[in-house]
Length: 93
Image 1 (cartoon, rainbow, N blue to C red):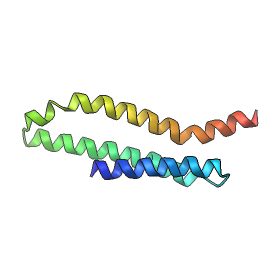
Image 2: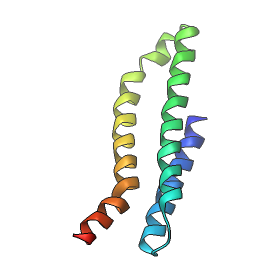
Image 3: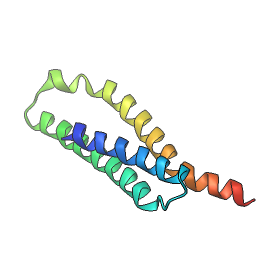
Image 4: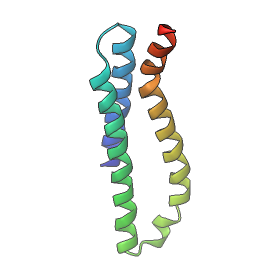
Protein backbone atom coordinates (compact mmCIF):
# COMPACT_ATOMS: atom_id res chain seq x y z
CA UNK A 1 0.00 0.00 0.00
CA UNK A 2 2.81 2.41 0.85
CA UNK A 3 4.24 1.95 -2.63
CA UNK A 4 0.95 2.93 -4.30
CA UNK A 5 0.53 5.95 -2.02
CA UNK A 6 4.14 6.95 -2.66
CA UNK A 7 3.66 6.79 -6.42
CA UNK A 8 0.50 8.89 -6.15
CA UNK A 9 2.45 11.43 -4.08
CA UNK A 10 5.16 11.61 -6.75
CA UNK A 11 2.62 12.05 -9.54
CA UNK A 12 0.75 14.74 -7.57
CA UNK A 13 4.03 16.57 -6.97
CA UNK A 14 4.86 16.59 -10.67
CA UNK A 15 1.33 17.77 -11.47
CA UNK A 16 1.84 20.54 -8.91
CA UNK A 17 5.06 21.68 -10.57
CA UNK A 18 3.57 21.38 -14.07
CA UNK A 19 0.51 23.44 -13.11
CA UNK A 20 2.74 26.12 -11.60
CA UNK A 21 4.90 26.37 -14.72
CA UNK A 22 1.82 26.66 -16.95
CA UNK A 23 0.35 29.38 -14.74
CA UNK A 24 -2.64 27.38 -13.51
CA UNK A 25 -3.88 27.10 -9.94
CA UNK A 26 -1.59 24.52 -8.36
CA UNK A 27 -2.71 24.62 -4.73
CA UNK A 28 -4.96 21.54 -4.88
CA UNK A 29 -2.18 19.49 -6.45
CA UNK A 30 0.20 20.79 -3.80
CA UNK A 31 -2.17 19.73 -1.03
CA UNK A 32 -2.59 16.32 -2.65
CA UNK A 33 1.18 15.86 -2.95
CA UNK A 34 1.75 16.69 0.70
CA UNK A 35 -1.25 14.64 1.84
CA UNK A 36 -0.19 11.54 -0.05
CA UNK A 37 3.32 11.93 1.30
CA UNK A 38 1.87 11.88 4.82
CA UNK A 39 -0.31 8.88 3.97
CA UNK A 40 2.74 7.05 2.62
CA UNK A 41 4.56 7.59 5.90
CA UNK A 42 1.54 6.42 7.90
CA UNK A 43 1.28 3.32 5.73
CA UNK A 44 4.96 2.55 6.22
CA UNK A 45 4.56 2.99 9.98
CA UNK A 46 1.63 0.55 9.93
CA UNK A 47 3.74 -1.97 8.05
CA UNK A 48 6.50 -1.76 10.66
CA UNK A 49 3.87 -2.07 13.40
CA UNK A 50 2.63 -5.29 11.81
CA UNK A 51 6.17 -6.62 11.72
CA UNK A 52 6.54 -5.91 15.44
CA UNK A 53 3.24 -7.62 16.27
CA UNK A 54 4.27 -10.65 14.21
CA UNK A 55 7.75 -10.56 15.78
CA UNK A 56 9.29 -10.60 12.32
CA UNK A 57 12.76 -9.61 13.46
CA UNK A 58 14.56 -10.11 10.13
CA UNK A 59 12.16 -7.64 8.50
CA UNK A 60 12.73 -5.16 11.31
CA UNK A 61 16.48 -5.24 10.72
CA UNK A 62 15.81 -3.37 7.46
CA UNK A 63 13.94 -0.52 9.18
CA UNK A 64 17.04 1.68 9.80
CA UNK A 65 17.74 1.61 6.06
CA UNK A 66 14.15 2.56 5.25
CA UNK A 67 14.21 5.33 7.84
CA UNK A 68 16.95 7.28 6.08
CA UNK A 69 15.26 6.89 2.70
CA UNK A 70 11.88 7.98 4.08
CA UNK A 71 13.37 11.05 5.75
CA UNK A 72 15.12 12.04 2.53
CA UNK A 73 12.09 11.48 0.31
CA UNK A 74 9.79 13.31 2.71
CA UNK A 75 12.14 16.29 2.76
CA UNK A 76 12.40 16.32 -1.05
CA UNK A 77 8.63 15.95 -1.47
CA UNK A 78 7.91 18.80 0.94
CA UNK A 79 10.48 21.04 -0.72
CA UNK A 80 9.20 20.32 -4.23
CA UNK A 81 5.57 20.83 -3.21
CA UNK A 82 6.17 24.19 -1.55
CA UNK A 83 8.62 25.38 -4.23
CA UNK A 84 5.88 27.20 -6.21
CA UNK A 85 4.86 29.19 -3.14
CA UNK A 86 8.48 30.10 -2.42
CA UNK A 87 9.00 31.11 -6.06
CA UNK A 88 5.86 33.29 -5.98
CA UNK A 89 7.10 35.02 -2.85
CA UNK A 90 10.49 35.59 -4.46
CA UNK A 91 8.92 37.00 -7.63
CA UNK A 92 6.72 39.43 -5.66
CA UNK A 93 9.72 41.08 -4.03
